[in-house]
Length: 518
Ligand code: FAD
Image (cartoon, rainbow, N blue to C red; front, side):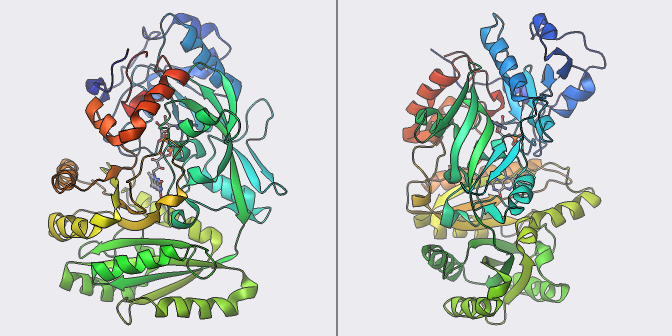
């Protein structure tokens, strides 16, 4: 039997590292004598660096940090903990871009996966493209930007992305990986052919839909609970050269949502957009977030005054891929696409960019915020999936009510996806409706963030009171009842798979789902 989620919340609170550390009592001393000993660091500088994440809301010191030089190092560590009389928890940490401590290991060992990013010591390439097979084998520690750059050398690219590319393959596949291509190709976890996984018992298993399918589907969207992804075989498609990228402004939410849904139903990708997203531009926030650089100054002024008059406007974002030789076609196609939509006349904005620049579009905003000291600040984000049938209620209750008069900073994303592009066998959890919306409230808490957390609670409270059957994406819960509710009908199999693949509950403890052996 096992205890769940009554996690050591107290261990995920602000901590101060000691200035000097003897060997930590949580770890067996024999660890030092293993060949990974020299790459297992306990000095406070190092443990402090791995004690928080992008969210900067949670802090928890690990007892040690492993910088693996090969996949073998990771196996050694997990096998050692699993067979020890004093097992310790282990968190693979990708780029640490979680929001609420999901990649932390309080008193355990963090594996800094990116130390293998430039190749392991065993000479195995960590990124390898098969043009014949149309796939790439990517190490779990690889950044998506590196996957893109490598695959483009062959004129190929993955088809499903996240908005931001400085995230790792293992990190996003443990969640789902969604962006504006998901309506067409599903999340990133729908584009994986095969995985190498080190289970919580320290066993290396190659799995796919045909080979060890149970582990394969467990790991995809599995929040790091069943194994450490060391390689993913990811489907590729021919990469386009250029992107015609449009943003269309709406004052009316119903029209905005209707048009988004119309666009995601053109799902052959030949006539419609290859990418569909959307955002809410609040009056105070139009020109001041990492997505604003799309608009020239002059247009920002017009949109701002429209948003000021109405409190907020809705911005549909679409992208059509093309090759330079087809440039004469793309305008015509776009024109007929736009004709069928009901945005505000005079409020259609276009950009023409390379495919790489389009996919890497958040980077410019990041660099700008970094230069202003506004990137490494608390991020009390809330990401939820909302069923289509309740999206109008969500707009009324949240965008037009709770958020209407506040000054929260950061992009607010909203776009629909098709459930039939998600494989039900994975661990990922989505609402039970054909179309559901991804909503990202990507707050920056520059001066104070506590009130934003209160606002997030108010939003969730509203959804619960109104009976909106939403699901959190990048979920964060601290009680057993909440995790059970989150997984719903998938809970029993989630627990069963944990028992099978990580019976000592060693892996990714920062998710706060399982806290002791099964
Ligand atoms: P980490 O935060 O390091 O880890 C996440 C979880 O996965 C942890 O539990 C960790 O233990 C586990 N894990 C890490 N590596 C492995 C591995 N190799 N094997 C098994 N488990 C592992 N998400 C989207 O879907 N779409 C977006 O557009 C998007 N944009 C984002 C933009 C920004 C600026 C940020 C900060 C986040 C964004 N995210 C987005 C969220 C992002 O996908 C998650 O935060 C993801 O977990 C971050 O990846 P990471 O590599 O930093 O993982």
